[in-house]
Length: 195
Image (tube, rainbow, N blue to C red; front, side, top):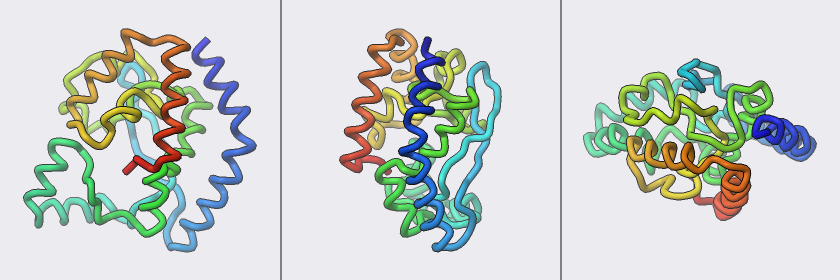
């Protein structure tokens, strides 16, 4: 049932989201570099898949991150704890805006369509983050475009703390939980509390 609802909502939303994605692709291309960014992520049962995003960072962002973290001990500590930076210097001008409103995540609707992800579930993690993640519920679920972590402490908790949200979701998974999470996600997106 969950998979059928994912497919139905993606197909219904497609005509609205495709023109928006196309517009964002044009804006990103005007800024220079590729519009899309593909990254390996861990899916259900530990299977690795390629996650699609709109590029919000400078080209060669991984090298830029390594250099930045090497020169700034405070940023390095923040990265090691949270696996993200509040003030990420790699963001482009357009990238800062699309990240704030989570628009960079829209191409993941393709990942939902092909079955790599669900609309609601744990935030997909990178293979190199596997050792930092203390939970197990993540591996039993399809990662989600949104989830309990994204609508709650998104910018205020450690990477390891995300496991508590994944465990809670696994224990309370239902159509009602998914519907509530999707509604809360719209509020988060429209108020621009992403980063």
